[in-house]
Length: 416
Image (cartoon, rainbow, N blue to C red):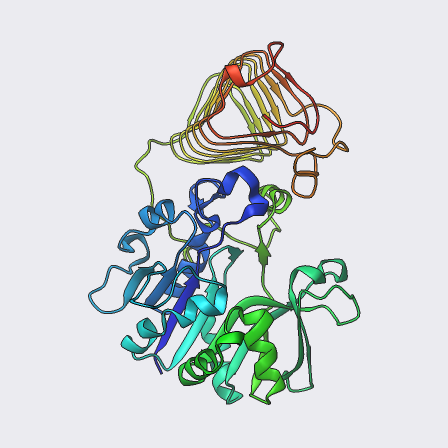
């Protein structure tokens, strides 16, 4: 049985605000040297699935540059391997992907050309390790048309997921996409599906009105018509880092010994496109506690409970605490950073205090996205010397001194 993986990586990730302003969500850096998509790609390779289509749409260039021909994942192959699948327009034909199912529908030719028996459909924006073979074996044992990976979630979060009811054999009897009511149970879809290839092609081709999205259209329709749709319970670590709060907290969670996800295991490794950087360098006054430092970092100040991507420089006297800092950030002398997410190539001026004030004051422009006390700084921005920037502040990409108030003070919940 040949399995082809189709990795949905076209999402805008708008809840990540400025972090996904210039890149697709799966291309956002994560846990130092990785990107979010590295986890799903590595799962495929570690499961022996070597034919992978990556469906891109929103801001695909960073993602395409990262994946390249797939060499870091051993997917640079003459047969199979990885292939980027952007939306395209045929004569009188399709356009932008209208949803998850429509994206697969437009690429049924790729599945057919690779002679797939089974199609594994994945999201490119989740953090987890999973051997897909166990799920494939369960799918075959159940003689299923479709198998959906599931796990329980807190009742208060059920509105974010597809929620289902299953019988004693694990067969799905009811499916509700992001229900507003909280009486449908808490067994949630992980966005991981295994289809029989012929069934997938039939269901996507039958009715144009119901092929937009899997959770909203295809799965409920298959359950209603009596197809053999089964659940597969996953017991491991899995999280959707789709919000600023979850992105920040998940990065810092990885610093804990009992977090449930081993980033550096040789048994089930997470692979990535590595940059050639020198080893971490610590100055004579450096102090590092409970942090993850990537190659190329130079630490001459203090770093506490933080995750630093390659090339971060922390000057003498600077304090970085509870922060996620991406590549090539420069932290000036005496600067104090607390509870931040900072994108690439940002310069923090000397003496600046960033992340201070009242966490309860949510961001005025994005109260539903920036509310947990985390201040976010976009790519290539310059924070003025001696600036004082509050909590839940959003600073856009490519901002410099002229964009800030003359006194350098940005209050809680403001945006620049």
